[in-house]
Length: 330
Image (spheres, rainbow, N blue to C red):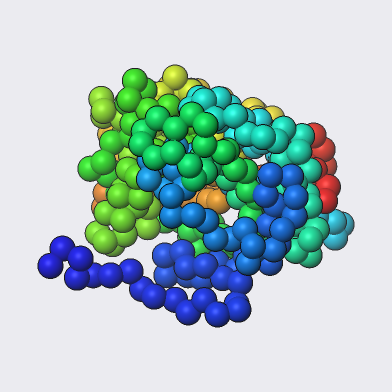
């Protein structure tokens, strides 16, 4: 039977958790919806006729809040994330009923209302229930912000020991097929398939190439390689998301005196790199020590990766105050 392997069933009860993979996501009791703080029990359920559920048109962001060394909580690059959310909505012609400024303030409200000193924020814009069919121009546009606890996305040990990756059989979207610069709900199907394929084959993460075979990105991260001290990452003209952590690392690398190139990367260049690492809000800066059973460099986190990782965490967690413009205090 095609449906013989059903999804695991979780007991919801009163515990504010949702099932995500094999882990439980501990979300806050309060969420933000269209400008107001509401209870999860009120807004945490949605109509089965929500247009986004059927046709995949929706936009979202992932944002981290860190408790820094001084004991205060700051959200990392909040404004940049919400501007990108607005750009994603613009690409698919969704017009939220709230402004960028309201969503920025909503992120602060959600953390405060849920008494979270650290957490992961998920702004989400959907096309609500109403007309069905591909064309539904008058359905309401709903904007939510959810907060939950989330540690190291690929595992705490991964930040130090690194991960094993597989070049996926699934390709990143062609630039004339989908909006590569949009963080859009339906576009993540191939990322889900790529990640599932990698995990079933015993790897930690997938790396996707574009339809021409050039390295694009991970299932949810940007890719960097280091060769002879030079840092290279695919250009924004490639089929990649314009990662905010990617931009952060490029800035920090140049401040560290490193040469950074934004150029297309071939699969063999990936195999022959001295170092490889992935960046993203969830993944932060994660070393890659093996790709397709080929050891990368020494098989351990490289020195350039270590330096950039240390600098990144010093900024988000409080030892480095060189970029106050990146931090919004809660």
